[in-house]
Every structure is written in C-alpha cells, then in structure tokens.
Amino acid sequence: MSENLSQHNGPDHIGIIMDGNGRWAQAQGLSRIKGHRQGVETCRRIIDACQDLNVHYLTLYAFSAENWNRPEREVNALMELLELFLMKETKLLVKQKVRLHAIGRLEELPAKPRRALKKAIEATKNFKEWHLILALNYSSRNEIVDATKAIAEKTAKGNLSPENITWEMIAANLDTSGLPDPDLIVRTSGETRLSNFLLMQSAYAEFYFTSTCWPDFTKAHLEEAIRVYHNRERRFGRTGEQLDVEASLSR
Ligand code: FPP
View 1 (cartoon, rainbow, N blue to C red):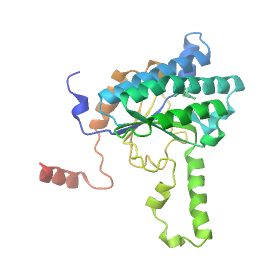
View 2: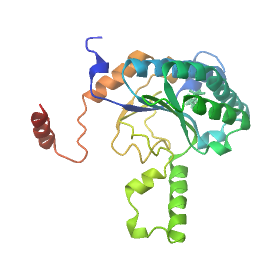
View 3: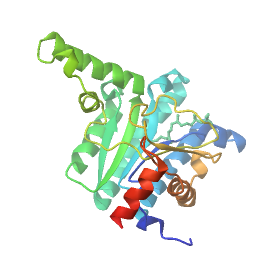
View 4: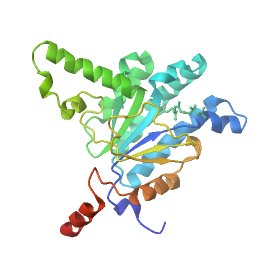
C-alpha cells in the first residue's frame, strides 16, 4: 500500500450491504447456504480490517425484513448462522473491545438468536471506541413507521405539539439513535440499490459499489472503497469554493 489509509480523515462509519453470497456459491456448484457460511467468514475479516483502518463504526446488513420471503430452509440456515456467529464472536469482540449493537425489529427474531444477541450486546455494552452494528430483520421503512408512531403517541397525549417536531427528534426515535450517520455505504456483487438500508441515515453518505461478491471481499477491497471515498468531495450543500476557504483557514 502506498499510503497509510488509517491516517486519513474518515470514513468513521461504514455501512455494508453484504450481497452475492448465493451467486458466489452457485458459481462454484455449492449450495447457497455454503455461500452464507463463507459470508460469515468475511464479516470477521472485515471487523478486523475496520480496526486496522481506524473505522470506528461498522454496520452490516445481515438480514432484511424482506429476507423472510426466502425459502424456509435458507431462512432457518441464516438464523442458525447468526446464532453461531454471535456465540463465537462474543469472545473476540470483547477481546477487541468492540461494542455490539443491533437495529431492526429484534423482537420478531427466533428465540435462540435473539438470546445470543442479547448476551453479546450485554457482554460488550461498556466498550466505547469500536462499534459493530448488525441490521437484523431491518427495514428503513419499518424503522420510520415505528419512529412516527412513537412521536404520534406523544402528540396524541398532548406531550408534544406537531410544530415542534424536528429532524433531531425523529432521528432520536430511529433504531440508530446515538450512533453517527454512515459516511460510506458499500454494496457488493454488482447491484446498485439501497434495498431499504439506512435510507434516512445515509442522506449525506458516499456510495461505493463493487462487483466483488461478499464471500470474496477482503481488506484490500475495503481499502479501495476508502481510497475512492477520499477522492470524493463531501459538500453537505455548500460550494467547493466555500470548502476551500474553510480548509485554508483551518491550516
Ligand atoms: C445476500 O446474499 C446476503 C444476505 C441475504 C444476508 C447476508 C448474510 C450473511 C453475510 C451471513 C450471515 C451474517 C451474519 C452476521 C451472521 P444473497 O443470498 O442475496 O446473494 P445473491 O444475491 O447472490 O443470491
């Protein structure tokens, strides 16, 4: 590597849509479930890579609310993999001082992975620097519905008047409350959709799409995504000239 990526400013939070497990497996005559199993190995590799590259927040889209529509056998295998992942990972997360969070309608997960999740979250709850967020039974639209209901209840009870509703209030009612917005969203396997992932939170995120399937995704691929991110100019609604002036003032 010609540059030390970990010295750069950000991205501090990367969200990943881990796509292509099925196609990766099918291309080599393996079952889709083997592809997911390999995908779990990639998760571990990328958690390590994030620490090396100074990325403090990593959100992995592990199971969408729409994924229940897959064949029952595949859904069951994914839930088993999730439970195994959590049981195996907890020790490592503790060793690496990574705090685990989960977003999504967790109460609808089967009892076993839900229990493993609760334990892992509890075991890592005091860590402050590194964060792994698993999106499970997650749907941005569901999350917005849930946040809207919570706010509507407050207004119905007379505790909040509608004109006082702010974005900050909405954000505080999303599952990601307390977590920073993602700076960079990566999707593997050549698809270029968001598929209901962090729609509100990625309002100002940069996007990086790669044709590499998730089981083949390595630290080198992540470094490339970060390199591309560093070449983008994030203006947050301002002009390039304004940014240049600010940069020269801060030098
Ligand atoms: C997409 O591949 C991936 C998923 C639906 C889930 C991602 C799950 C994993 C990486 C494994 C489980 C993760 C954890 C943390 C336990 P796909 O099946 O849609 O691939 P395809 O588009 O090629 O069919």
